[in-house]
Image (cartoon, rainbow, N blue to C red):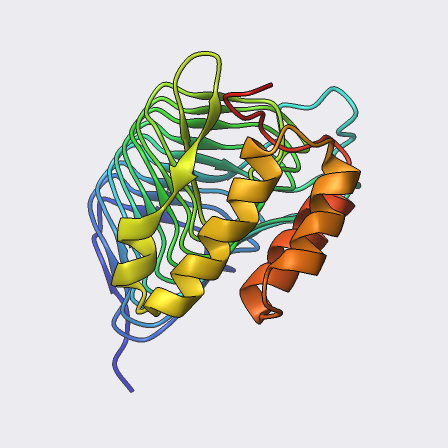
Length: 263
């Protein structure tokens, strides 16, 4: 067994559970009710508060605060968690708040990169392979699906949903749901096409990309309302997992999806 390497200048609560080969640098602070997986590094000045569950091979950089108390007036001190998966990079001064009674936990998946000064509020759920750009601010109970990329200084309204393989322009303000496979940007924010570069990097075939593009051509360029557009997609676009995922996401959206250029 390889024990953690804890600097004598760090403050680590005796009840914190640290895995093998964990490194805790000087002036890091770790409270009780914390679990940190093998091979994770806690950099100097990072703060890991009660309720944190950090996976393996993560790196928590200086000034980051994990499992901070939620910025929610309804929070009454209940027990809750902030869960971070494996192989995540949490850069300088990122804040990740723990959950409230609503969901009980804030979750960040595996292989995520949260750049400096990003904020993840209470009860958010982030999937795997997500990039959150510098100074982006994610409000409470937002859901972000796998392989989404939010550029710098993006603001996301509470309860919004951002689907898979999405690319969001820096400085965007999100108040509607963002359907899968798309690019969004401009001010006010609007649909800008499909995320073709991202899809090719994820090994989507030309046939898959064609069907995705056809579905959004109908949704955003026919001038149809959402209900009629989805009927047209079902009728005209060959059935596939991608087509059905788009239909299911748009149909189930409670906030409505981001507008198109014709709206």
